Image 1: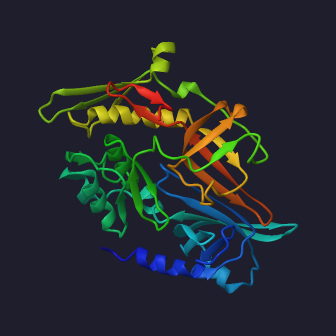
Image 2 (image 1 turned 90 degrees about the vertical axis):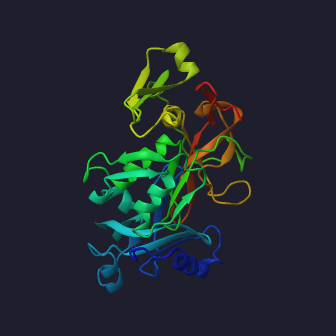
Image 3 (image 1 turned 120 degrees about the vertical axis):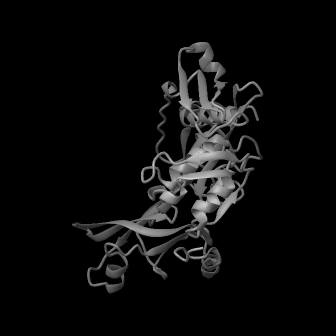
Amino acid sequence: MANEYKKRAELETAASRFKNNPKEKVTLVLDGRELPHMSGRFAYGVDVLCPSYNCIIAWNPKDDFINKATARGSLAESQLYIGPELVCSGRLYARENVIAKNGITKQLEFYSYTADIVDGHIPPKFKEIKNSNLRQIAELLLGIHGFHVDFKNDPGNPFDAVESERSGVETVGKFLQRLAAQRGLFICGDSLGGVVFQKAANSGTPVARIEYPGRVATEYKARFDDRLRFAKYFASSMSGDGKPLNATASDPQMLEKAPARQLLFEANDADASTIKDAAEWRMLRIELEALSVGFPVSDWFDGSGKLWRPNTIVTAKSPVLDIPDEKNYVIKNVEFAWTAGERSAQLTLVPPLTVDGSGKLKVGVK
């Protein structure tokens, strides 16, 4: 295993120095040094392979440390803490120098180590992988660069053979996301720069109750586009002996109102035992996007005082956001924002989605 990435144990040990931080404090570490900053944002989600954060700092052009750490090509290593908790580890990839009437600043943009697999292509020697399940494939492609791989759910049956679309074109991230889709899994990055495979939650105990009016931010805006949805989702593939394979998943609401809206797609990595999973996953993926709603809240913490986390359940009510009755929702994504004087968060909520035994979508059934 390559030493390009810091070991998780080293990051965990370094995090112990912030264990007594007040829970509202945001700490930016750059090249091992805690760096004061003026404002920032951090975003992560159940389907976000590369979490990211940005911070604005005051800049004195004579500060040798800042100049060196933020120079082009420095790829300075960084960590972001909210309270005592390490929420993201990665590198400085972009910066913007700003000279304005009120001073000189730098906006620093950091991305998880997983940015490298989002951007990096599959080596030619891995163009074809045979008789391996998703976990084995992930550990093969990610392990060589020191990435930790975590499966929250079963990786599913082995693939007979999988190929990248074309050597030098398909990135590692897209390749793994394509295969994960055939097994009904989403991929996200963790706080230590590892990769997590998991299903979207569809049940659980709510961690908070949020309502409008009540625990809110200053602005509400919601756009819903049912044109993103389809009545039927057809997956097609070919078996090893050349026989066509097909499976269908459907959205009953759209089937009743707009039956002509049908989506056909190829699931070339699916076999007879997984073609149904591929159709259902594509439906869930699209419906999650179409049915999502942004819900701003004025604090970073849920009902138990913990940071808002993707893939957990909340109870929500807001007629303004088309949620007239109290219902359970899944937190799909979270974005935190802060300045010297205030903090807020934006939750992206989706109703719990399940698929019954006949491939029909059920919304909010648990």
